[in-house]
Length: 172
Figure 1 (cartoon, rainbow, N blue to C red):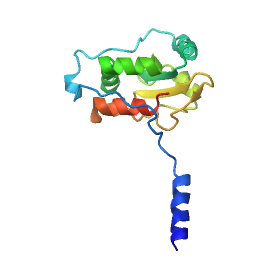
Figure 2 (cartoon, rainbow, N blue to C red):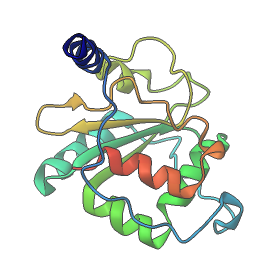
Figure 3 (cartoon, rainbow, N blue to C red):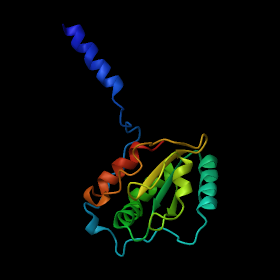
Figure 4 (tube, rainbow, N blue to C red):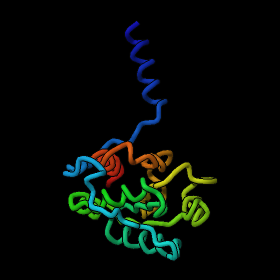
């Protein structure tokens, strides 16, 4: 009977998609809540930039530096996007993110611009939310966090440390 229970548990574990394991420790974020972030929050998305050129250049830098490519799809109108940018700008986060990722921000307008970037990584139709964060292996150009791209779309309910923990799950 114990063997059947163990086999059933093993089958469940194998069948269930596993969340990525944190291979890298997240930095300790000294800012306890978003209302303690420096104000005004950043406006990280360049509305007039050529997203295809931006992403290609960032991928080339990621290849050269052996880091992962982090594509942040969002808009300056989005509070969650600006909270993510403000958290990444914290000194302890900036050091961590810069050591693990090459970051490129892509303006998606009001979900009506630069959809080709998400589509390039297998995301069909309209994004379910923003920020949509794509973590890409620059060598294969493969999306590493498929199914988890919009988990930060409600960043305001998470807090700075939770954002750091989420990013650490995808760090190389």
